[in-house]
Image (cartoon, rainbow, N blue to C red; front, top):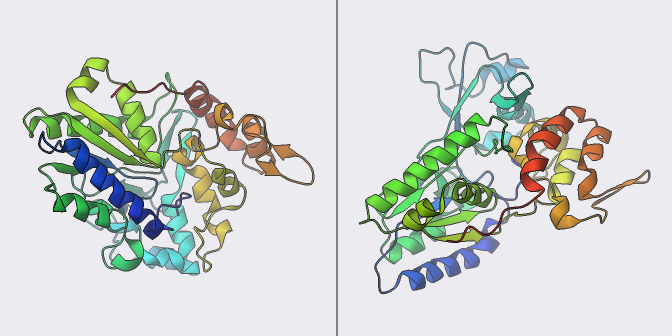
Length: 341
């Protein structure tokens, strides 16, 4: 279960999303539609998994669920890992958590999936994976559907002028000099998608519309490409609820786990999985933004954004200190200037 509020409270954001659709229409009026690429937030797109022969289930139930998962490398066996309503059923929450968990590999200085769990992101290049987290539960898992419909009403067409850039939101990026295979591969694919969208529309630069965690990826995409590339391929960056300085809620997630307000889920069952998420580490509050004021208050001591390493150690997650101090802090400490698009 992701720690962001992507799946919770979507409907209150819909007026904002509709306003953004009108804004995009206004900025494109008179010159025709510019291609639009949507980069979703944390937990804002579907994620599929397949269990291989190396997978060791923690229980008999996990070995049997879901029935269509299958085994081995030869068959398909792909199933929706996020979002699936079985995560709300306590006996199955543990199965979900162990499959979502990442492993930080010190010998690689990088993150990898749990052994025996292969994952993939469906519908890259399309908005299909962003509309609903579960297409069978549209009323409670709607995400970008209203925004996409509004864009289609003013002439946008999926795969022609409108594109989605879903990603494995468990992974993040790392400071210069540190490997980050999944996140770096995504930035490469995102750059190619932006170039393809522009080329397919007569060379018009694309509009990047991002939400939450997706805005961090979008900003790094712009900064990791030269100014000439930005001028040629990106017209605007439109950021919705960007966590430029991180979020205090991540402190709660690392300490106690987060259920997104779902009462049936025990937060401790998903806490380990959430702690393992590279992107959650990236979203911890930045000292540059939050300064020295206390963010976590306990009877023994308080913790500010500048004391996250001590906080991680004291909550029993000492293994997170090294990746936080070496991979995350150098990347967020100085901040990033405006991308000039």
